[in-house]
Length: 174
Length: 190
Image (cartoon, rainbow over all chains, first blue to last red; front, side, top):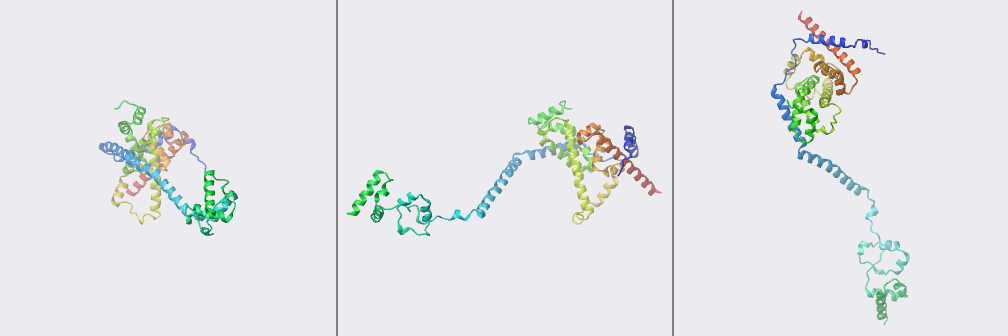
């Protein structure tokens, strides 16, 4: 272990004695060159110019833009990359007509009018378009003639539409 | 001489009057320059530190709460920047010594000028240069600037007892180094 043996010697007098000795040793020695008077005025001008640059609107706008844009761009790119690589394939899978039908309540499925000729297990909703459940009056009539009991189908529809259905059926059966 | 106090000038700068900051610079630039010059040793480095000190002070003026005087605050910035510059230089010197950089960078554009500068440096400057950084800062503030230990303590945020020990050891090292140089010089004369 190292012991400091000189701690007791640290007094104001000892300090002053050492400083005086150093002054004596360096007497006559040339100190560092003193800058000319013009230097001091020049320092103020340069500092002010640096402050102007640091606080100008341009510097602030670049700094602001950088602060906002860089994280923003990073976030957007990350999101897009993540979406591209990690979105499950199921999102891109178009449901088949069968899947749509099976997802409906049983009562709805029973009353649905689907053109059998257009139903195929591989057919998707996108393939058949938005008019998959739109049928002509003739198709409606044929369906009820084939399957009978049309009152089941018209239980849930307004009276005006029900009358239309019965009228079509009456004319078709003639 | 502008009769306004430092605090009044600081308040004016905060209110948007830049001219007041020029007055603060005028008051303290020489002291800032010399403390930096004595710690880092060269005019060019001291010049950089003076500029950086005032720019930093201006930009951070909003943080100046007036707990210490404006001079102590700005002096602290200058001393810290000077010590940082020394540390950077030590790293560079180490790299030069380990020949990692000397293969890439020449020590100066003009080696003759380097030698000349080294020769015109006084024994005292060389001795101060060789001190550890904390002792060097205390030595510069006390020996050259005549600051009290309380003032130095506020700048370096250190206890007076520790500062006294630092200064005392710095004085002894400087004296020994100067004595040795003088003896060596006399020895080579004979």
